[in-house]
Length: 370
Image (cartoon, rainbow, N blue to C red; front, side, top):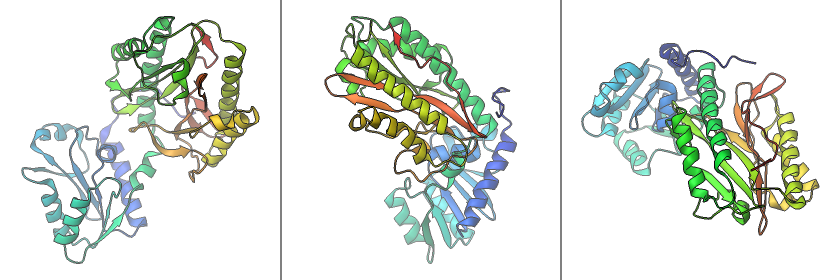
């Protein structure tokens, strides 16, 4: 297993140099003269910048970082490996000047992020330029985590689990879903979270049949299953986990559904290893749920990558073409959602490592009756 513990202040220079080298390799592999980054998460990945507005241009002649004057002081300590420019007017105009001066003919851009207006402005302003969508180029690099990222993800998981310990103290008959969610979020903040990773899900009773049933004013009733899905963000990196509780004793039917999900998750975890297709991991969970008689009630993929985004590559689903590699951090989260009864989802984060995987989340997956 690769090391998880160490200083949280990761040496920025070495990380940036390595990531920029990989990005330059991706540039060359696609036959591009330059790669324009507009997705702020990808910009953070290659530069270390934690602000909210910037462009980055990576070329064979050098790497260029542009932002506005709000971040003039911030970039001095955060951004390494780039020629830095503070833009006082429109950033895209400055980008156009750079592209023209570098005589770039084939420019990769993030088609899933760059606006059509910006695309058209570049196309119209520079004669003879060919714009090539390079969406996924940086996301592919981000799919495998380095040791520094693993440290931050593990901390985000520890914070999330502190929140789950808090919610176990407050779930009970008559408790309002929204109140339970708030208590959990307070606990994460106290444990060091910079923010919640996404809107906390607390879905009890019949509402548990909605996979994304955000917390409401509904009161939890005795005998109901309660699905809680939440995560924390720490230093830009996210965690994501789900537990299903029962308020009081679970009846036979609800226990049967829970056991089917738990067994499906275990089968999927056992399938995780480097070189395995992500769809094979999904199939391991999906086949078990189908054989248990609940196939039509499993309505989403088995998991996804987690890092700077809560949902990133690889995708663990029936149509995924991704192949697992060492260092990928993914969720395994099968679920069953039965209208009129409720739902069960159990979600853990695992790291692909050598001949198998390491389960990063530590709290029990067994049914907890509160």
